[in-house]
Structure formats: C-alpha cells, structure tokens
Length: 123
Image 1 (cartoon, helix red, strand yellow):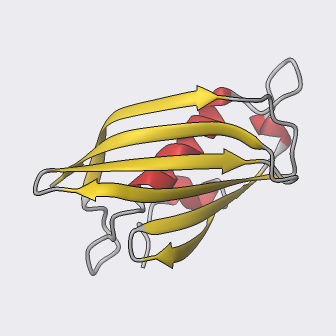
Image 2 (cartoon, rainbow, N blue to C red):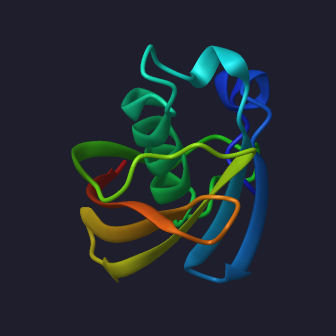
C-alpha cells in the first residue's frame, strides 16, 4: 500500500514497492513542469523525491502517511529533458522517532539527474 494523496494523483505518479523499505515512483513529465530554459523545474524534481522518500515507510491501513519530512536535501546532478522521471528511494535507518532515507532520480535514458536524502519524523 502507498500513501493516498490528491496532489500525487494530480501529478499522475505511479508507485511500485520494490522491497519492504524501498519504492520506485515514476512521474510523467508534462509541459507545465518545464522551466523557462527548457529543463524540468527543480521544484518538480524535489517533489518527486519527497513523495518517494515518504513512501519508503508504509502508510497506515487507511492509506494515511505515518511520517512527515523534517529535513530534505536535494542535489541536482544534471539538467533533465525527459518524458518521465523515476525515483528510487529506500529507508536507510528506521528509528523510534526518525527515519533516514535516500533517493536517486533518473531520466528516461537512465541518467542520474538528482539525488536526495531526508529525515522523516515517525508520528
């Protein structure tokens, strides 16, 4: 099961759980996501990372998230012009209050375009 949020559905994200603590999230790129220099906006890439990272921790039985992001760092590696983006995220360490997670984002040619890490608060 994955977190159910209208915003993620609006963006048409697709989810796949690859292990108990890891996910793959795919985002189709729309013209609206491209900035004035013709590459995918960093905010879109950051949003994809945040969604993937939060989904490394399973939601409750109603699809409600059980973590919130308290720290998110995104490092942009390469400008992206792509039909879709794929984020692969995994929980590095799950503690009683905090979960640390990492994420890699690739374009449709499997080029690494960004990496991210987050600290998630388990509520």
